[in-house]
Length: 68
Image 1 (cartoon, rainbow, N blue to C red):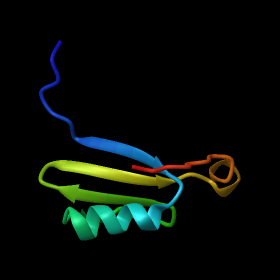
Image 2: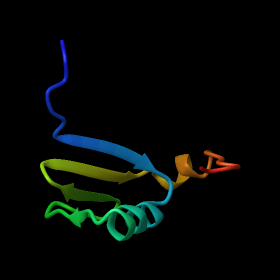
Image 3: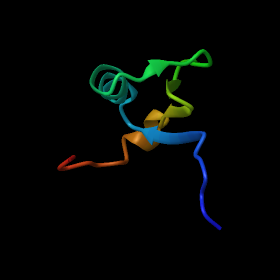
Image 4: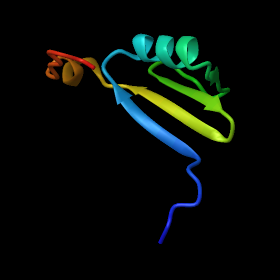
């Protein structure tokens, strides 16, 4: 079976503000209508990219020493 289209991608993130700055500011994605605190949908063409903030207790346990 081959994938013909992708409608939505959900990314879990430690820092939703940094991710928004990248996807909105650098790549030009537009913010969707169904955004709430800790969850933001971005749209480009027919693709919806949803960013979901990892809850703080879990995010604090994730260490990123050398991000790309």
